[in-house]
Length: 109
Image 1 (cartoon, rainbow, N blue to C red):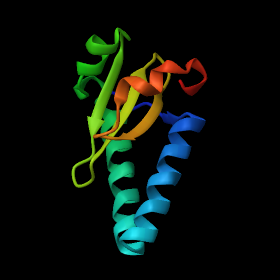
Image 2 (image 1 turned 90 degrees about the horizontal axis):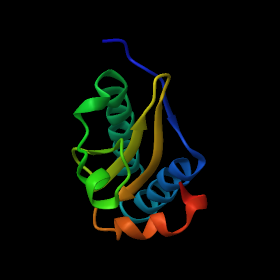
Image 3 (image 1 turned 120 degrees about the vertical axis):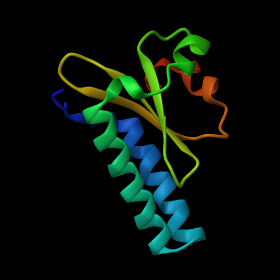
């Protein structure tokens, strides 16, 4: 299987920046760098095998094609959609966040 580029949307980049700022302030640079490593590992795995992500939220939110991948050591989920050309990363959200709430604003997708 050929890997595809993983392209995070602007909102996904902002999500990552907010999480990084939190980890730097609350836990230090080492923990923040670990978060970056986890994001990079998740993006690499999604690139190689996008179909392995969970379709749970696709069913719950009625968004066909939406998948999630949980980070291993951090409580975050990567939300993405596989296309013919790329992996479109919509959001990177804390797992305890009210996931359906981010869908209330179509500009957030």
